Length: 498
Image 1: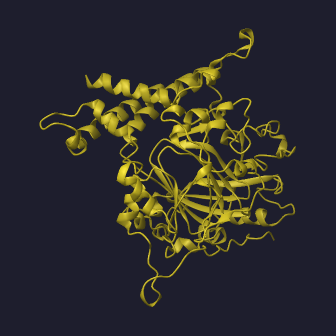
Image 2: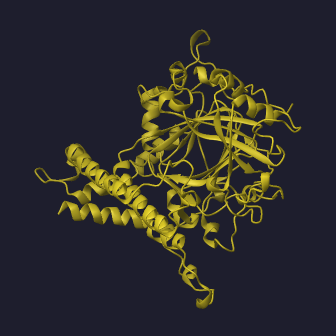
Image 3: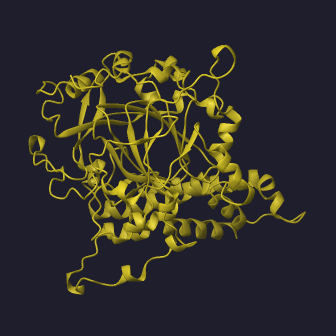
């Protein structure tokens, strides 16, 4: 049996007892934790905040008993995201990309298995061949991932389970497992690099370790964003960030990679619009996350509605009979133009309703008495990703927050990035957080706004015009680029406000 298969959650290093008579106190009150989450613009790891959560002691084996044989869907992918590419494929499945392992394993290119957690654990722990739903997948060559499993669907009538996840400790009263998503995977399971269009993210690591690769929003041009495969609220990168094709994507060299290994008992805060690629480092990993809604989401929903309409219209016209080639499995079905038009109108109306309800509170400090805020002013408020702790006295405040209980996720050194695959040695701080040894002196410095401008050299044509073919996906990469859809949404709202 492989180590860790029973899933005993190791005690988090750094958990400590303070207070009188051994009473363990949390380092942040709910109010302070929320203040940090709503203002901090850098990923950070909260420690010592969940030691009393019942879910802190969950394992995949425990969850299999709670679910009582319930079948869930696992995504199956090839191991070796960087240096190896097994030349094997179940049942001749041509969906797997075996030729170029520099290409991300998108969800549209994976196979899927419906199985119980018990069957997953048997396959994952027994290195010999097994019968059942995983019989066609050699454990040494494939990983399995039960991702995006919403608690309300997974546990259904077992609502007592919801109370074992206590997000109210982070300043969100009443938020628990009902607003959470679960992720259960084997060694090597990963999520392609993407950013979430809405909100910020809190991720609680329950069992096993996961390595996170994060990139700031300003680096979006260097991540080569795409909306194919299409999934509402997810912008994918064309790059396999652990084995990038720098000849095809040279601008990626400018991206500023941040890395952290998240261990059981720790909670990662992912700010709005930070790109992330996540991979499982242990035989069994269990994570729970909750997306926190933000004021900025109102404009983002208009942008997403514009994106949905354009993608569905062009891709359906191109190939009306095979939507699954471009529609992510998380999307139930492609929608009609009529439905998408209603969705766009609803998003625009919701934005104006939000402006109307909040204009006095938001703009009072920004205008002269009696002057009404414009829609443009509201959009500027929406675009600002919350108040920043990166200027003046607030910079000192942010620095004072970091310590054993709130550890910043920092830039990865060049040496660290160069040995991503198979590297299991992590620097461990005194509080037990696993993260790379990242001296501040190695941070890349960029001039203000430099990342938002395209490199002129990238526009030079290196292919003979007669050999160029512009596909629908190429066109969509331009039309629904995040920078373009934001501009379209702004123009649309401005036009309707006249």
